[in-house]
Image (cartoon, rainbow, N blue to C red; front, side, top):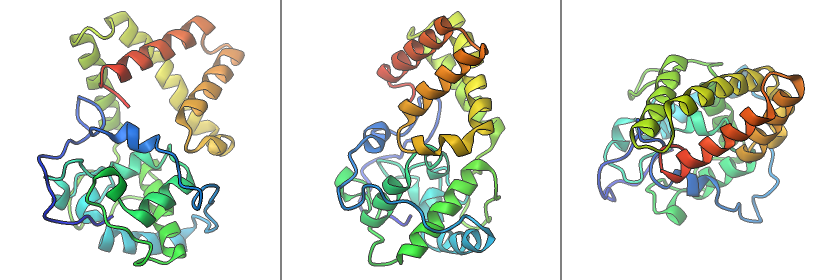
Length: 245
Protein backbone atom coordinates (compact mmCIF):
# COMPACT_ATOMS: atom_id res chain seq x y z
CA UNK A 1 0.00 0.00 0.00
CA UNK A 2 1.14 3.53 -0.69
CA UNK A 3 2.42 5.53 2.26
CA UNK A 4 2.49 9.25 2.96
CA UNK A 5 5.84 10.85 2.34
CA UNK A 6 7.57 13.39 4.53
CA UNK A 7 6.75 11.57 7.77
CA UNK A 8 9.81 9.39 8.12
CA UNK A 9 11.18 9.37 11.63
CA UNK A 10 14.17 7.15 11.20
CA UNK A 11 15.36 4.12 9.36
CA UNK A 12 12.87 1.35 8.71
CA UNK A 13 13.42 -2.00 10.35
CA UNK A 14 13.10 -4.88 7.94
CA UNK A 15 12.63 -8.57 8.59
CA UNK A 16 16.23 -9.16 9.58
CA UNK A 17 17.89 -11.25 12.25
CA UNK A 18 16.23 -9.34 15.04
CA UNK A 19 12.73 -10.39 13.99
CA UNK A 20 9.79 -8.42 12.61
CA UNK A 21 9.65 -4.63 12.39
CA UNK A 22 9.19 -2.97 15.76
CA UNK A 23 5.56 -2.82 16.88
CA UNK A 24 4.31 -5.30 14.27
CA UNK A 25 3.19 -7.81 16.86
CA UNK A 26 1.07 -5.17 18.60
CA UNK A 27 -0.45 -4.05 15.31
CA UNK A 28 -1.34 -7.59 14.30
CA UNK A 29 -3.01 -8.26 17.64
CA UNK A 30 -5.01 -5.02 17.65
CA UNK A 31 -8.79 -5.48 17.97
CA UNK A 32 -10.66 -5.15 14.69
CA UNK A 33 -13.29 -2.36 14.77
CA UNK A 34 -16.88 -3.57 14.91
CA UNK A 35 -17.74 -2.38 11.40
CA UNK A 36 -15.03 -4.62 9.94
CA UNK A 37 -15.43 -7.69 12.12
CA UNK A 38 -16.56 -10.84 10.37
CA UNK A 39 -15.83 -9.66 6.84
CA UNK A 40 -14.84 -12.47 4.48
CA UNK A 41 -13.49 -12.25 0.98
CA UNK A 42 -16.31 -12.85 -1.54
CA UNK A 43 -13.93 -12.81 -4.53
CA UNK A 44 -12.45 -16.18 -5.56
CA UNK A 45 -8.67 -16.08 -5.87
CA UNK A 46 -8.83 -17.08 -9.53
CA UNK A 47 -6.66 -15.90 -12.42
CA UNK A 48 -8.86 -12.88 -13.10
CA UNK A 49 -8.77 -11.67 -9.51
CA UNK A 50 -5.02 -12.23 -9.24
CA UNK A 51 -4.43 -10.31 -12.47
CA UNK A 52 -6.51 -7.39 -11.21
CA UNK A 53 -4.83 -7.52 -7.82
CA UNK A 54 -1.38 -7.59 -9.40
CA UNK A 55 -2.11 -4.45 -11.42
CA UNK A 56 -3.45 -2.57 -8.39
CA UNK A 57 -0.59 -3.75 -6.19
CA UNK A 58 2.02 -2.63 -8.72
CA UNK A 59 0.44 0.83 -8.91
CA UNK A 60 -0.52 1.41 -5.28
CA UNK A 61 1.55 -0.85 -3.03
CA UNK A 62 4.87 -2.01 -4.46
CA UNK A 63 6.70 1.27 -4.00
CA UNK A 64 6.59 0.77 -0.21
CA UNK A 65 5.93 -2.94 0.31
CA UNK A 66 8.22 -4.08 -2.52
CA UNK A 67 7.45 -6.16 -5.59
CA UNK A 68 7.45 -9.34 -3.54
CA UNK A 69 5.50 -7.91 -0.61
CA UNK A 70 8.39 -8.16 1.85
CA UNK A 71 8.26 -4.56 3.07
CA UNK A 72 11.40 -3.56 1.19
CA UNK A 73 10.21 -1.23 -1.56
CA UNK A 74 12.32 1.85 -2.32
CA UNK A 75 9.87 4.32 -0.75
CA UNK A 76 9.75 2.28 2.45
CA UNK A 77 13.46 2.21 3.18
CA UNK A 78 13.43 5.16 5.59
CA UNK A 79 9.98 4.72 7.08
CA UNK A 80 9.65 3.99 10.77
CA UNK A 81 7.69 1.84 11.41
CA UNK A 82 8.74 0.05 8.24
CA UNK A 83 6.09 -1.19 5.78
CA UNK A 84 4.82 -4.63 6.73
CA UNK A 85 6.11 -7.73 4.90
CA UNK A 86 2.54 -8.22 3.78
CA UNK A 87 3.20 -11.34 1.68
CA UNK A 88 4.32 -13.06 4.88
CA UNK A 89 1.86 -11.57 7.35
CA UNK A 90 -1.16 -12.05 5.06
CA UNK A 91 -0.76 -15.81 5.49
CA UNK A 92 -1.64 -15.47 9.18
CA UNK A 93 -4.09 -12.58 9.27
CA UNK A 94 -7.84 -12.75 8.72
CA UNK A 95 -9.80 -11.32 5.81
CA UNK A 96 -11.43 -8.82 8.13
CA UNK A 97 -8.11 -7.63 9.55
CA UNK A 98 -6.53 -7.12 6.13
CA UNK A 99 -9.62 -5.39 4.76
CA UNK A 100 -9.66 -3.06 7.79
CA UNK A 101 -5.98 -2.14 7.57
CA UNK A 102 -6.08 -1.47 3.83
CA UNK A 103 -9.31 0.51 4.14
CA UNK A 104 -8.28 2.70 7.07
CA UNK A 105 -4.52 2.92 6.58
CA UNK A 106 -1.98 3.28 9.33
CA UNK A 107 -2.88 6.48 11.18
CA UNK A 108 -4.04 4.53 14.24
CA UNK A 109 -0.60 2.92 14.49
CA UNK A 110 1.48 5.98 13.58
CA UNK A 111 2.52 4.48 10.25
CA UNK A 112 2.50 6.42 7.01
CA UNK A 113 0.19 4.11 5.08
CA UNK A 114 -2.72 6.01 3.56
CA UNK A 115 -6.37 4.93 3.80
CA UNK A 116 -7.74 3.26 0.68
CA UNK A 117 -11.45 3.14 1.46
CA UNK A 118 -12.08 6.17 -0.77
CA UNK A 119 -9.51 5.18 -3.39
CA UNK A 120 -10.21 1.51 -4.08
CA UNK A 121 -13.56 -0.23 -4.42
CA UNK A 122 -14.49 -3.18 -2.21
CA UNK A 123 -13.70 -5.57 -5.06
CA UNK A 124 -10.32 -3.96 -5.66
CA UNK A 125 -9.36 -4.30 -1.99
CA UNK A 126 -10.33 -7.97 -2.03
CA UNK A 127 -8.37 -8.50 -5.26
CA UNK A 128 -5.27 -7.02 -3.62
CA UNK A 129 -5.75 -9.31 -0.61
CA UNK A 130 -5.98 -12.31 -2.94
CA UNK A 131 -2.82 -11.19 -4.71
CA UNK A 132 -0.65 -10.60 -1.63
CA UNK A 133 -1.70 -13.97 -0.22
CA UNK A 134 -0.74 -15.58 -3.53
CA UNK A 135 2.63 -13.81 -3.33
CA UNK A 136 3.22 -15.19 0.14
CA UNK A 137 2.21 -18.73 -0.73
CA UNK A 138 4.33 -18.77 -3.89
CA UNK A 139 1.29 -19.20 -6.13
CA UNK A 140 2.41 -16.19 -8.17
CA UNK A 141 5.78 -14.60 -8.81
CA UNK A 142 6.14 -10.85 -8.33
CA UNK A 143 6.18 -8.40 -11.18
CA UNK A 144 9.58 -6.72 -11.32
CA UNK A 145 8.93 -3.02 -11.21
CA UNK A 146 9.87 -1.19 -8.02
CA UNK A 147 12.38 -3.62 -6.54
CA UNK A 148 12.48 -5.78 -3.43
CA UNK A 149 12.75 -9.47 -2.72
CA UNK A 150 10.21 -12.18 -3.32
CA UNK A 151 8.98 -14.50 -0.58
CA UNK A 152 11.82 -17.00 -1.02
CA UNK A 153 11.53 -20.27 0.96
CA UNK A 154 15.33 -20.45 1.21
CA UNK A 155 15.52 -16.88 2.49
CA UNK A 156 12.72 -17.64 4.93
CA UNK A 157 14.64 -20.66 6.23
CA UNK A 158 17.78 -18.55 6.62
CA UNK A 159 15.84 -15.87 8.46
CA UNK A 160 14.52 -18.57 10.81
CA UNK A 161 18.05 -19.88 11.40
CA UNK A 162 19.36 -16.36 12.02
CA UNK A 163 16.56 -15.71 14.49
CA UNK A 164 17.42 -18.81 16.51
CA UNK A 165 21.13 -18.01 16.36
CA UNK A 166 20.33 -14.59 17.79
CA UNK A 167 18.30 -16.25 20.55
CA UNK A 168 21.22 -18.48 21.48
CA UNK A 169 23.71 -15.61 21.29
CA UNK A 170 21.54 -13.44 23.55
CA UNK A 171 21.04 -16.27 26.04
CA UNK A 172 17.27 -16.48 25.55
CA UNK A 173 17.50 -20.16 24.54
CA UNK A 174 20.12 -22.92 24.39
CA UNK A 175 21.47 -24.59 21.26
CA UNK A 176 19.58 -27.78 22.13
CA UNK A 177 16.38 -25.76 22.42
CA UNK A 178 17.08 -24.11 19.05
CA UNK A 179 17.40 -27.54 17.45
CA UNK A 180 14.19 -28.79 19.07
CA UNK A 181 12.37 -25.64 17.98
CA UNK A 182 13.53 -26.12 14.38
CA UNK A 183 12.46 -29.76 14.30
CA UNK A 184 8.96 -28.98 15.58
CA UNK A 185 8.70 -25.86 13.42
CA UNK A 186 9.46 -27.88 10.28
CA UNK A 187 6.69 -30.35 11.16
CA UNK A 188 4.28 -27.47 11.76
CA UNK A 189 5.11 -25.95 8.37
CA UNK A 190 4.57 -29.28 6.62
CA UNK A 191 1.27 -29.79 8.44
CA UNK A 192 0.09 -26.28 7.56
CA UNK A 193 0.90 -26.76 3.89
CA UNK A 194 -0.98 -30.07 3.79
CA UNK A 195 -4.03 -28.84 5.72
CA UNK A 196 -4.32 -25.18 4.74
CA UNK A 197 -7.98 -25.34 3.77
CA UNK A 198 -9.12 -26.73 7.12
CA UNK A 199 -6.90 -24.22 8.94
CA UNK A 200 -8.43 -21.17 7.25
CA UNK A 201 -10.87 -20.76 10.12
CA UNK A 202 -7.86 -19.84 12.28
CA UNK A 203 -6.74 -17.00 9.97
CA UNK A 204 -6.19 -13.94 12.13
CA UNK A 205 -5.52 -16.04 15.22
CA UNK A 206 -2.04 -17.52 14.74
CA UNK A 207 -1.77 -18.60 18.38
CA UNK A 208 -4.92 -20.72 18.10
CA UNK A 209 -3.73 -22.10 14.76
CA UNK A 210 -0.42 -23.08 16.32
CA UNK A 211 -2.18 -24.72 19.27
CA UNK A 212 -4.46 -26.72 16.96
CA UNK A 213 -1.55 -27.88 14.80
CA UNK A 214 0.53 -28.90 17.81
CA UNK A 215 -2.40 -30.90 19.18
CA UNK A 216 -2.81 -32.62 15.81
CA UNK A 217 0.90 -33.48 15.64
CA UNK A 218 0.84 -34.90 19.17
CA UNK A 219 -2.27 -36.93 18.36
CA UNK A 220 -0.67 -38.34 15.21
CA UNK A 221 2.52 -39.23 17.08
CA UNK A 222 4.73 -36.92 15.03
CA UNK A 223 5.83 -35.13 18.19
CA UNK A 224 5.43 -35.74 21.91
CA UNK A 225 3.46 -33.57 24.30
CA UNK A 226 6.75 -32.69 25.98
CA UNK A 227 8.13 -31.43 22.67
CA UNK A 228 4.96 -29.42 22.01
CA UNK A 229 5.14 -27.79 25.45
CA UNK A 230 8.84 -27.03 25.00
CA UNK A 231 8.17 -25.47 21.59
CA UNK A 232 5.57 -23.11 23.07
CA UNK A 233 7.88 -22.18 25.93
CA UNK A 234 10.78 -21.44 23.55
CA UNK A 235 8.47 -19.46 21.27
CA UNK A 236 7.28 -17.34 24.21
CA UNK A 237 10.82 -16.66 25.41
CA UNK A 238 11.93 -15.58 21.94
CA UNK A 239 8.93 -13.27 21.71
CA UNK A 240 9.58 -11.80 25.16
CA UNK A 241 13.18 -11.14 24.13
CA UNK A 242 11.95 -9.25 21.06
CA UNK A 243 13.61 -11.74 18.71
CA UNK A 244 10.49 -13.01 17.00
CA UNK A 245 6.85 -12.11 16.51
